[in-house]
Length: 257
Image (cartoon, rainbow, N blue to C red):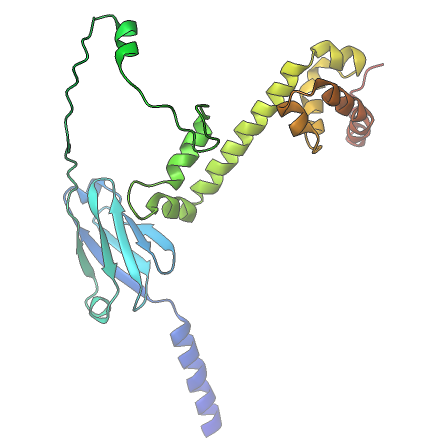
């Protein structure tokens, strides 16, 4: 009987300690009903946002550190101490962030009133491309991804938040898709349409599908990027029969005689 009671006590204790510990609190700030504050547990790498009344609930335990951040308010760290856990709901005060101009520079450029001439008089810095260097412009998808993984502060908060929400994966996928579509278009620019329809006997409506099929070959990308037209022609010709078999398996004979 004693042994049975001991086992029950041990099971109850394990179940109790295995439960998640939550920290409840309320944010005190101006216009909090119309603002969302990112509440991040930096230790556990999990996050949440506040409700309209400023209240929040997040998994936390003794020794964790919470991070509060929003565009409208100054960032704040909250170490989870014994006192914090005992004083729930904890009240967190956030201060409205005020951005001040540190310097105003007045130049001696004499403007003529002609926008084109005046633009040429203004000194500019070379455009920096973090994805490839030089002055090459990058796509909208690349700019969005660059913004999502960088931060002007010491803490890559955007990267952490976007990783938690899955937005970073979606932005990377969008960037890769945009790059792939650009590669497909470059391959079409290198070839003539009648090369596919007359030489390879691919119906015009399925030329794009055939190019997508060919792009799975590892030789496709370097041939397109280095504009090796002859190699690309050879590659396309070698893919006609596999493409025909692939479509035949789908009951879609798209090769013309």
